[in-house]
Length: 152
Image 1 (cartoon, rainbow, N blue to C red):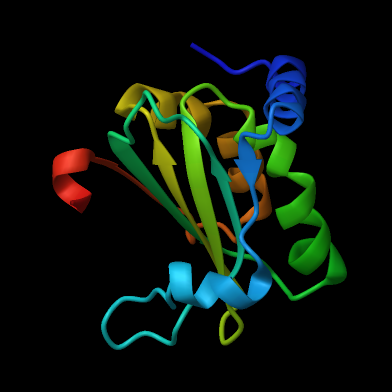
Image 2 (image 1 turned 90 degrees about the vertical axis):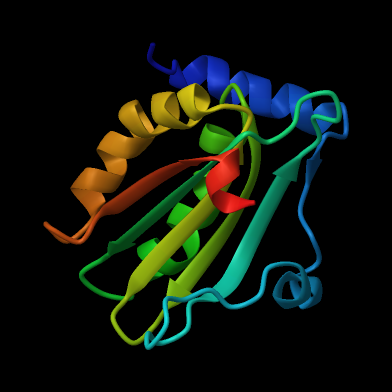
């Protein structure tokens, strides 16, 4: 199955208009989503969090995507993270995303929660994953999909 960008975009707006999309205040992001890194790494600092209410559907899968970009340009730092919100928040099965940045090597990390492994894999194998593959420095893209037992 593949995602249709226009339907995802329209679904995002439906979710916003029904009050199901939330953005924690910037001063609360570090409390809700602490710095994220592997042991011995420089820290990834959170800078954007988006959540979507699905009280009747638990998060059963997590997706972690890490990649590097060639430089810290305005386009990478400000436009891409925010312009992409309608294209992942409206995807079927999306529950939450925390977006992290590490300035020491211009790396980004997205940590998503999904309703199912299938929803996460559909997302990463559709246009968003293709876009990340084009944007990332070759060889720097890491994608991990975990079932709920793996990230509990």
